[in-house]
Image (cartoon, rainbow, N blue to C red; front, side, top):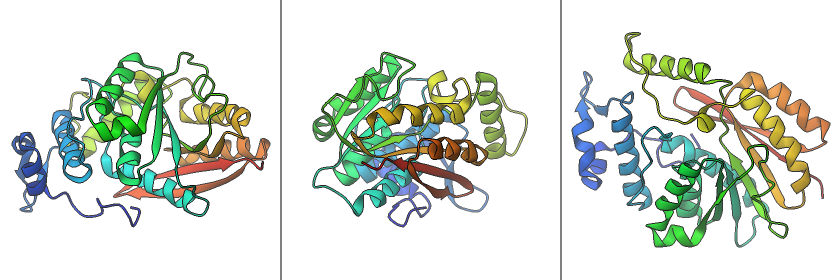
Length: 285
C-alpha cells in the first residue's frame, strides 16, 4: 500500500465496534485467535465500511442501496494518495477533481474531500446512484460544500455534458467497469467468494449494477474510449487517470495513448495479494 495509507495494518475491530455498535454481531474470533469477519457476507462488509468511514474519516451517515457496489476503503484511499503524489510537484492552492462513474457510494469524492480537502465533482449515468450519492453528501455539511454530483445523460459520453465550457479540473479519476458481460462478472465474483470461503459450494451473491461491473468491450474498450474523448478536453484537465484491473489490457491502452501523442505513466499498486495499476496521461499544451 501507499506509505500514507492508514490502513496498512490489520483492522482494529474493537475500535471500529466502539465507533459503530452494529458491526459487533458480524465480528468473531478465528482459529488463530484474531478478530475478523466473513468478507463474503455483503451485509458484514457494508457495516465494516460504515465503521471505517465513521472512525477514520468522520463520515457518519454513509450508505448505499441494496445491490450496489460496496467499495473496499483501503484500496480506494490508496488511489487518492497516488493522485496526490502526481499533483504535489505542480499543485495549486485549491485542487479540483472529477470522478467518472462515482456510483451510489461516492467514495472517491468523499475520501478526497475528507483527507485532502479537495473540491470534487462526481458523475454517473445511473439515476438511482446519483440520488444515493447526493444523499451521502447532503447529510454532511463539510462534504456538501466540497462535492457536487452531476448526472451524465448520454451513455456515449464521458466528459462531454459533465465538464462545463469554462471549467478546469486538476485531475480526473475513474474505476471503470472491467468485465465484458454480466456472465463474466458473475463468474469473477463467484471465484472471489470461493477464495474467501475456501469452498466451491456457494451461491452467487454480489453487489454491483451493470454499469459498475461490466460494459461492452470491458475495461480495455472503455478506457480507449475515454482516451479518445479526453483529446477534446486537453486544455481543461491537468492529468487524466484511470485504474486498469487487467494487466493484459495495458499494451492496447498504451498503443492508444501513443497514437494521440499523450505523455503517460503507469503506477503500480497493491493491496495484500491484489495487484492493480493506474494509467495517467496528459497533453502538452
